[in-house]
Structure formats: C-alpha cells, structure tokens
Figure (tube, rainbow, N blue to C red):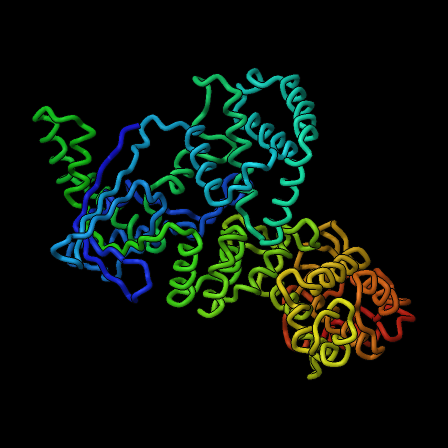
Length: 570
C-alpha cells in the first residue's frame, strides 16, 4: 500500500494550562475524507460495531450537498477531530511563532488492501486498547453461525469449506484450551470484566477475529471483499490516522457537493480537456473533484484516548443537539473498556450525562443473566418493533437501584422509597455500611445488590406470568402484550415494594426475592395477563394506568377469581 502525505499550517490553541492543545486549520473536504475515520454505531449483518457516530441520514446529506453547492453559503462551526493513530500524525510548533505550527498527516492508501488485512489491523488496534483481548478464545458456536451465513451468501463456498474441516477445528479447539488452564482462567476473567462494564468491544473483537480466521483458511485468490456483512469500507473508519468526533454530515455533504459538480456539463468538459491533454483519467477526475471541493475548518484535539473521544462526542451531542436516549445510553455504556471508562466516568457525571443510568440499563439489555437481553431498543438502525423503550427500562431499573419511583398509578406513596427508609438498614446485602446513606451507596453501586434483586424479580415475573410466544396476550418481549409494557412492569414493581413494606420484610439474599414473591403472589392465577382485555393499543393513558393498577392490587389481595375483562377498560 502506498502512503499519502498531507501537510497543513495550523494555529495552536490551549483552553487551559493543563488541556491538550487544539490545532485549528482548514483542508479540502475531499482530502479530509481520505485521512479521517467516522466510527459509526451501526449493525453489520447481525453484529454491532463499537463506533459512536450515528448512522448517516441520506436526506440530511442531500440537503447539505445542496447547501454547499451555493458558494455563498458558509458553515462556521468546525469539524471536530482527534488522534486515532498518533504515529501517523506529526505536529511541530514554530519556534519563532509559538501559536503556530506545522501538521503532517500520513494516510495509507486503501489500494490493494484486502478484507483480511483490514480485519487484522482493526483487531490490532483493539488489542492495543484492551491487551487482555489477545487471551480470549474464539467463540466456536458464533464461528459456525457466521460460516453458515457466509455460505448462504456465497454458493461457491460449499466447495471451499468441507464439513470435515469444520469438525476437525471444533475437535482441536477444546484440547488447545484445556491444555492451558491459565489461559482459560484469564479468558473467563476477561469476559466477566467486559460484560460487567457493558462494553461491546469484546463482541466486536470476536466478530473480527472469527471472520479473519475464516478468510485465512481460504485460497488468497478466492477471498471476498465482504464476509457476512463486514466489508473493507466498514473497517476503514478504525484505520484512519484521524477520527472524526463531530461533523460527519457536514464533511460528507461537502464531498457529495463536489462529486455532483463532476457530473455537471462544466465538470465533464473540464475532465475531457484534461484527458485530451494526455492526463491519466483518474488523476483528471480527482483534479476536477478538488476544484470545487470546499475547504472546511477543523479543530483537531491532540489526544489519542478513546475515552476522550467518546466524552467529547457525548458532550457535543447531548449539550448541543440531543440524540435519542436509547442511542446515547448505548454509546455511553458500551464503547469503552473498563480501563477506558474509569477516567471519564466522573467527568461525564459532572457534565450532566446520565452515565450510571446508562450503565445500569446497558447491563440489563446485554447480559445473558438478564430477562431483558435483546428485548430493549438500542437506538441503532434495525431495532425490531415491539421492543421496550430504553427510557422505560431506565425507570424500572431506577425503582430497584435508586429505590425511587415505586408509585402505583393514582397514588402518591413511593413504596420503594418507603422500603428504603424503613427496611434497607436491616439488609445483609449492605451490612458493611454504617449509616443509611452509606448502605444506600453500597446498594446502588453499578454492580451492587440492586442488580441481582432486579434481575431475579423480573425473571420471576417472566417465568410465572410470561410467554415467549410473541403473539400471545402475555408475551414477554412484545410491548403490545398485557404484561411486557411500561404500565404493568411498573405496577408490579411498585406493588412488590408495597407488599414488602406492609409486611416489614427486608431482602438479604437473592433467595429472599423468590421467597417473598411466593408470598406476594400466593393464590394469584398465573394466567392473569393471558386474556384479551380488548383495550386497544393506546394503553399509556392516565385513566388506563390508574384502572390497571387498581384492578391488579385489589385482585392480588383477594385472588379468588380473575377480574372481569371489562374492568380493564376505563
């Protein structure tokens, strides 16, 4: 691969005595597009990447391209960039003019880059961020699924991978792992650390490594440019020397405006003139493209830390142009490893970003221990219909984590808060605390007792009342059902704390959750939610919420017979 070199005079700005310098300069949009990466949080096949930018809006790009086609129009705010490959970026201050300097960016051309090369280079980048990834074995079940997917997409592959080859690999892998107990232990530790911190990095790394392993087994001449949704273009964002923190639509809108010019009569005539002079057609087209390419202002932060990149992105987008809570929460809680999260967590909290809420919800949506796994909106394109809203699960987790919000609709008493004040001090879960305040801090830590209690509670609700058939009236995973929705999950949570408070019951173990729920639901018909209440889809109304809360509590206290269906409709 060849290397392209870009050089720019820059102005150096420092906002404080301890902050990293900002380099302010201008560059052609078409040049920026050759050395900047835009890591998007999106789905490739059925897998998530670890980027944080939103997926591009085609409509917005068209609008910006039209805007930039008028040379009188100017966008003042700069693109925000940061270092991604420090070795490819050199900055030298001007000794005679301290506020000025010279920036050099070296970007490798993608000509000749194979998908295997791209996958291996991205893996190396991730290993530099989280060294323990190197110790993690391939997920063989996931590898089989990806291989099957690749075969379905490429019919000729059936001849390249025999069933015998797959079987041999599956037989060898367990022996390799069992021969090194230390490696197995490290892998388990890594998994627990990454899953506890809700990071998506491990899963993304697995997707990369698995595809790379499949490609290595193929004859080089037969290796495709796309494998099970992963392409070279999708990997480039992680390999560029600069990462774009903010401004992807402005950048690509300006590039599209220049590309549109090349298709005009004037643009085609200029290209024809160059070709007639004997110039290389590709070089001529690039010259015409750059002729109308705008020079965009850039603010480059000389900091290669992924945690700083995520921090800057979240602050910009939450403080200036808020994004939907599901995507913000997904990005905040799953883009960094544990080590990368710790230094930025307090800064996010002080900046008013709901970091702890995001961590709590992300665990509930991604951990295999959780009854909500895969059943909550992520804000990423491709979310299925009927998933629980991120904000709803946030409010449900708050009832258990913060012990607030446990109110039955139509009532003013917060039973979760009442239980906290009356009975939390007696819990063995928080016996290490000396005061109610210190006990509450223990309770609501990211991996505190609240999480096991909440997970056990909702698993019991799912197991006792729910059905995995998404067409049933009591479906778990479909918000159109009577059970899996904001109203009833809130009612059940609040009523459980009402029961604990009325009976003066604390919780000192996960087993206590099951035992107290047995008493709470004694005599209750587990088919309570499995009937057609004929309420319709507009359930989240004040009258409906209050009616459902009243019907449930009265029935739970006297469960001799199920309520009449017409009682659910106000």
